[in-house]
Length: 435
Ligand code: UD1
Image 1 (cartoon, rainbow, N blue to C red):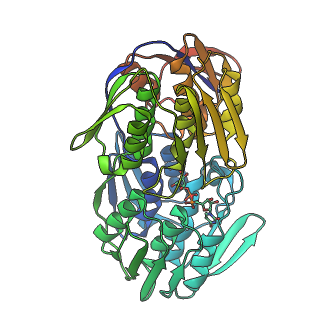
Image 2 (cartoon, protein in one colour):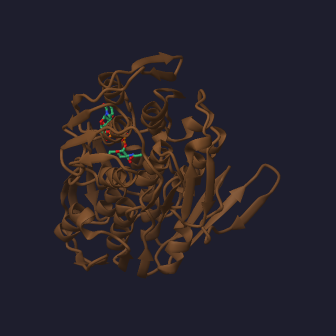
Image 3 (tube, helix red, strand yellow):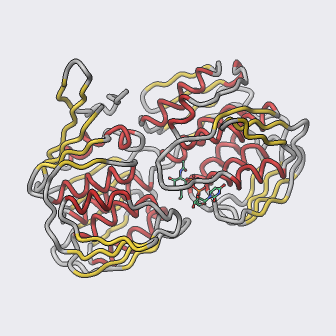
C-alpha cells in the first residue's frame, strides 16, 4: 500500500529530465525475444511495468540483466510455456507476448491482459490480425492459445486505429513468410520505435509512422542495441503541470515534434511554449482562455493526457469541454477532482468544465495511471495537502515522480504502509515500489 502526499502552493520552476517512453519499453522488451541473440535496450524507464515485464521474461526462462537505465535480454534460453494470469494480468502490454512468441515459436498461450481500467478494452483486432497470418486462436477460460504451422504474410485492414494491434501484428509478421501489409495502422512514435528495433534486428519493415506498414518476413533476427525514444506522455504531463501552477518548467530530452498537439493546446490557452532542439519550456500565465479538447490517435491530442488536461482546465476561468474519442469511460478522475472543489459535469464522452475555482487539498484516490497524474497536478495547485491513495498506479508509468517534482520546487513525499509498520520516505532514487 502506498500514498503520495502533495503540499501545494509552491512556485515551480526549473528543468526536468524526461525518461524513456513507457509505451515503447513495454513493446520493445517482448520484441527482443524475437532475436536469436542478446538485445540491449537503453534509456529504459525504471517503472513498475518494466519491472513486471522483466519478471515475466525471467519466469519464462529468458536471460535478463537489468541495470540502471538499460536491460539486456537474451531469449535463446526461453521455454515457451503457458502463462495463465498472475503477472500477465498486472499490465495491459503483456499482450505483446502473443505477437512475439507466435512469431518466434508458432505458438503461444498467455492470459488476457490487465492494465488501467478504462472501460471495455477489447483485443478483437489483435486476434483478427493473428488469424489473418494463419494462426488458430482459442480463448480457453481467459488464456489465449494461438498456434500456426506456418505464419504467412497477409493484407490486414484494421477497422479501428489501434496501437496495440498494429505493434502485435508487426511482431508476428516480422517472422512470417512473405509480405504483410497493415492498413489503417496507428502512427504513434512508439510504433516507429518498435519498427526501428526490429529493423536493427534484421527485419524488413517500411512505412512505420504512416497508416500503411509493410513487413517482409524473415527467418532469423539477430541481437542488437537500441535506445528508447523519450516519453512524450511523461513530458506532456510536466508541461500541463507547469501551465496549471503558472510555473516555468523546461522538459529536457524530448522530441518536440511528438508533442505538437500538446504545445498547440497550451498556446491556445495562453501559456508561452518555447521549443528547442530537444527541450520545451512552458511558462504559465495568470490569465488563460477556456478551450475545447478532443482526443484522437497520433498526431492528435493523446487520450493519455486527457486526464491531467482536465485538471488544468479547472484552473482556466470559463467553460471548457474535453471529449475523449478513444475511451468512452476515461473519467474516473472527475469524481476525485470534484471532491477537491472542481466544477465538472460528464455527459457521454465529454467532460464539461466550469473552470476558475480554487481546488482544495483533501484525500483522493488514483483509479488508474493517468488519473493519478491528474490528481498530482490538482494537488500542486492547492494551498493545502493532498493525500493520493493508489500510488501503485502512478508507479506503473512515472519514473522517480517525487524526485522530479522536488527538483522543480514542489513539496511531495510518499508513505509506504505495511500491515506491521508505517514508513515515511521518498522515492528520489525512483526504485521503491509498492508490492
Ligand atoms: C495504447 C497505450 C495507451 C493509450 C492507447 C491509446 C500502450 C501500452 N498503451 O493502448 O497508453 O491510451 O494506446 O492511445 O501502448 N480497440 C478495439 N479492439 C482492439 C484494440 C483496440 O476495439 O482489438 C479500441 C480500444 O478499446 C480503444 C481504441 O481501439 O477504444 C484504441 O486502443 P489501442 O490503440 O489499441 O490502445 P492500446 O494499444 O491498448
